[in-house]
Image (cartoon, rainbow, N blue to C red; front, side):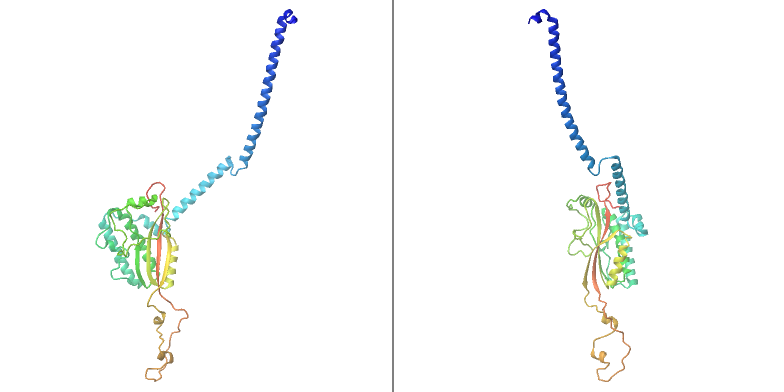
Length: 336
């Protein structure tokens, strides 16, 4: 105290300097603690960065370029797939470029010409058909379809023509039936594209037991995917040899139109044998060369009996025409 009283200014300066030194020391201590904390955070962040760098793909410029290249390849593949699903060759071009009739009467006359042409073709190829055969379009024997259904019915007629020509060129014995799906209204097509239940509409009648030209494809075998793929189904039933079925399937496999076989059913055709066709019989007189009176007669030249009999079968082939749903609209717009 004496020194403070004798030198108050000096002592005050010493006190102030001491307080400042103590404050600076505390600040240095706090700064060192903060530095240590930040160093720990920096080490942790570096570890996280190293872990992210090990992730594949790492969001670098090289990986960005790789992703863009992969996207371009995918888009090219999608475009190629869409183009292939339009069919190949002039047949697909004719299907796409055909002018859709504007009036129901135009469709009626178009279908009448279609029926008459294929009846003549059946005679030319020796294919048996019913006397009143209309090849799946009996509903329009006296009038055309409703205006809303014209595009679908006309397109079904085009596809049916292709299927009939392919079948006749396979040389079956008999065309039993050609069936098609019931055309859908615009509201039904929108519901199908969105996966919603079909609305009740007034138009072509629903499928009933009396409808021989219409059928409903089993959803378990259909290629439809709501919002992505739509399809138009047909069913050919005919009688012939296995070679006829093989020829038909090979024709469809050319993919001139995007037709996909969904099922093939086979059952024996009653009353068809190859023995009658070869002119041989199983009677004793033929086998031993004797007549009924017991007098031997010279045996004429006989055809050898085939080891494998050519048996006629009844084939039912279910086919779908595939369309990709356009991504630019909410309705089921065919790609073709």
